[in-house]
Length: 273
Image 1: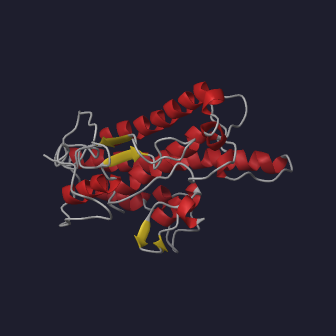
Image 2: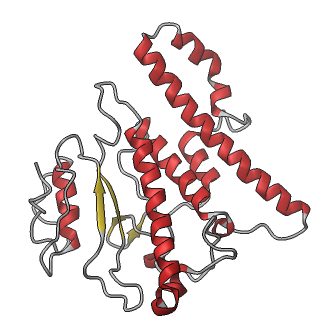
């Protein structure tokens, strides 16, 4: 179902389809018809980059190097994914889909691509969906379990798998922390960080996986959106507060003149500066 597999929409009934292959995302971001024959985007523009670099000041040179280092790191990670696929081919077995790759490696790689797109201004808005809303496929959580596990199935058997569920929750939070720290390490021209100027929201559409109840949703908001949001606080919203109130708050913090969004009843005033 498109409603289980996507969280971004252009409008009612018009989905912005999700992309799950890191290489396709990379090519969508950085590829052109002219450079598809080349292996690395950095190699294609290296001469021009060197020429430009000589004319930049020290701070701009550091920024320039930081950008290219980030792209190179992503390319190296993609090379590792290619090696995995090549080894699978040698064993004469079918190439697994992305769900069979180590989850942390996959999430961080997709997250790196998202951060790179924000960093260089390819987009100002991005969503990263860890998995479809209904996903029974067992996944390989590196360092957690000795075999692939289904998060969905565990969530419906909480009494039996509570320890494992807590491990998976912590695992996902660690991936979020990785991306938050990465964004906090990217300096902008005015001395602030990418995180300072971003609203990075992590959450779930369900408060309880077993009963499918959608109240008491745990939501983490990182970054202040350029100083428009208050950070460093824990808020407990009153019963019945619509999640749309948070999205309305985000929209207003981004300068969008909007009084209502979906079933919102107003912004979360405690978040606004």
